[in-house]
Length: 390
Image 1 (spheres, one colour):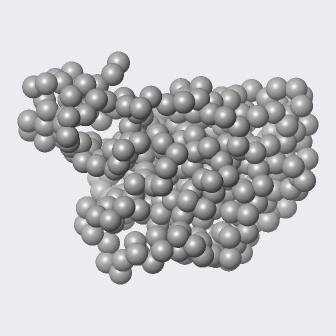
Image 2: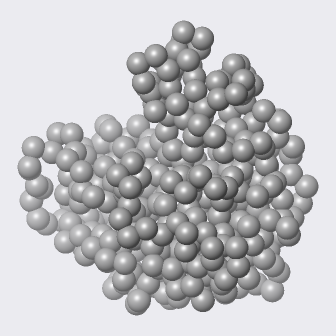
């Protein structure tokens, strides 16, 4: 399950039967407002350089950029389209869609890479906060090809005593993920199934495939873990489901990220119905220099520039304190002629903040280029950003 979905799959489940249930009911619209329709690029945008050209059918060879995996992977466009269509249909959770180990290898070298870049964003954010994963049992729930735990172990190398546990409904996926992990981390102890004690739980891109009762069960599993990192597509529906889960669990855990506070989610406040908690990861330079990725984007009609995500990190351990001026930017700044506006979450509230160009010309210029950190420190005067730290 976990890393086998492409970003932007329509949500079908994830309702929790408490305050989170209210979130789902109030925030599900028959017609999405235009300003938040499909932030993930699944509406098949016109891509730069496409020119209507389609690559020839057949099999190409491509080296997965992550891991330095030296074995080229056979690229079959028909197979990739079949997987993509399954993701976008909303039926991917109905049955196991891996038909062979080749499907998993192909997925791991393409769609999973994009999910891995989202995990890189989250893990770098955690490193910047001074957070470290606990030792002990590491469960990759719904492991798919294993991209989530590989991203984690690349950022935070396993210490003595760490045991990786792999769980997925697909035996093919578990076998593939185990083989990849053994190749890359030969000293790591690897087991299958759900351990009795979970020190760190990884969950990735599962909500779009789950029924409400399945989400309830998974939330109960998360409630018993010591730490949880949960990454999902940055859609309105998945974001609000994660918020519901956050509200269910925040009395048991410290909220590490993305929230700069431990209180109720500001998106639940009246008047914030149009907002949702999402960020954008940055693709690596290879996406814009490797001819394969350009071909991949054109053939499958994916905007490679867009990597929206929503995530939630919880920990029972004490977490590093954040500055009282810490804020988290939602989405991207809206850069206008004389100022920029951005939705930001802080310990005080969720609000629209204004950065005046003449007061912060360097910051304004960076925002205009799309260069900004989602986690920042500001001093505010009303809605105006008076000081940007650092």
